[in-house]
Image (tube, rainbow, N blue to C red; front, side, top):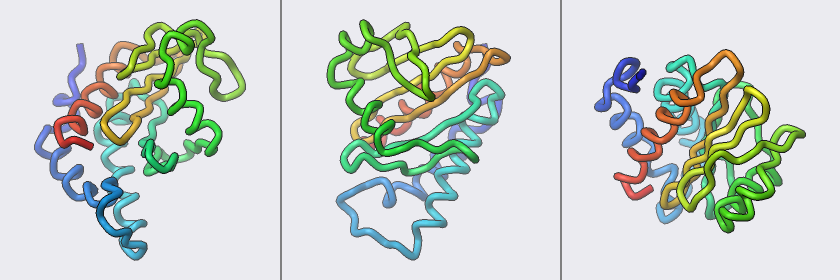
Length: 166
């Protein structure tokens, strides 16, 4: 099994997360002049912790409180409606499990849906959502990737945010 540590040391992830903590925390005053720098740091974190595994195609971090996209991998965009659907999917996991998850013009069948994680697939592609105190971490995979490695990478990054109470 591939570990994130194979691609990046935990202390490097911690350093990147600490650099962007103020940007994620809604209680700290907004600093527009620093937004681009902090967005790039979050994007670097997503790339280093998820995309670099070779088993996460796209990734994003959304903040639940204000339904906003905080960072995403290059070329990966989410509409406000899609972000809201992801947030709502955690409100009733049993309904999400039953109905599936709508994303990119298709219904993904839920493999797991509970209060903290949602794993869904459509044919050989899939999406992983993990909820923390204030965020949702998203990772997608394609048919040339191992879903289990995608799940592990997204869950580990989310665990780190959970330890920081973010």
